Picture 1 (cartoon, rainbow, N blue to C red):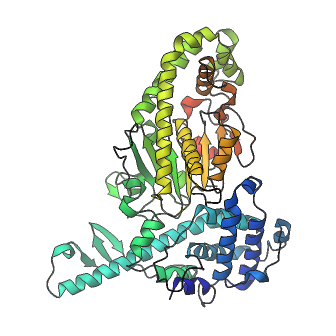
Picture 2: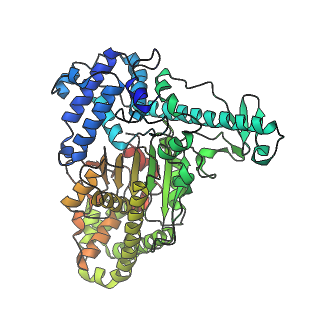
Length: 546
């Protein structure tokens, strides 16, 4: 069966089909989502272009002609269909719709063989599906659960297909005697041992809605799907290490703390149940998260150690989660220098009432008190700090350009990825997104699902924020803290030494820009030095699973 036949026959089977009475209201919602984009999408040509392509593909996969839909449905029109899909049917419906999204384009050539057009789940298709489900008032928890369910089913079937093919080859070799590469493969009751890990045989996909994907889940297609959808070619993100040709960035690698896949970090939390106990390898997820730490105060592994305590935030539902470990020596050196400078030089000069506020763990007046110190204090104490800060910022920007290259090459896979930048890690994220925007056409589909900036130490222009917004399919979050002495002090230092004003720092204030969600972290942290020890509270505050 060709990929075209699979796509157009999606709703024709007795199993796995989405009833027309559910498919029709969904397509009305999908069309309304395409025709009524978010306000911020007005300048992004990708929403209209990708949306029309996605809508046409979904209509063919669900076997409902586009011309049978209303010509110009509005969100208000869709609200009348909110109860057309009963609540008990939400989960199964979303499973079927997600499977349809995963299928290759329904316009694929009829000559295509199964597996030649890889399965894919892009940030654009996820954003459009998310929007359509919102219009139908279907809780997003169903999509998050469906993504987890489908990823596990897909991976199990792919490994099952591979194992069956290997077992058959082993059987044939056994006719001439065991040996060679098959000498390390032994059949077991209900499973096969490969590389010392027992992998159980599955009885097939659990959900009928996944049946349309079966023609693509063969031993021949497994490398294609694993490489494109899950990004496991060459070990994926966890197997990536910095190349010496990338001058200026000595460390650039990904540490996996949640999830599975063939290339996951052997030391990841996901692989450890207790000391000395190894869990069964997990399937990779349909969505991924990359967290990018920034300044360090105590040790090079400080941020990684803190993020390992946040595993549960990315485990229900589970998603592959990585930490981008970049330039730890520079982040630690800059962090220590800034910490000493603020505590000994700036706060040491603060007197009276303001100093009392500092002892109480900060108020907005503390920040104003620090930046109101005489210019001479900044001029006499700030050059070393400024040089250290500039060097750390330079490394962060270079790491951001490398991250953009990683995303463009889709090392993370053909799947939505959420990027979370903390402190100077937010500068890495900002540089990556602006680089993606500069190297893409306005109508190109975004490579990022969500971008969350936490305490961004920069004052971007309107044009730069528009670039960031164009590179992200769904959420852009600016999480700020009004009592961040580090950002206030560094900003004032640059102002004194000829740079921009401290008050424009994104990490200190709400942006109030279209398409950017402002989130005040002042209730979660008191300042920059609490980002690492309180990272779990911070991640909860920014709603990492939304």
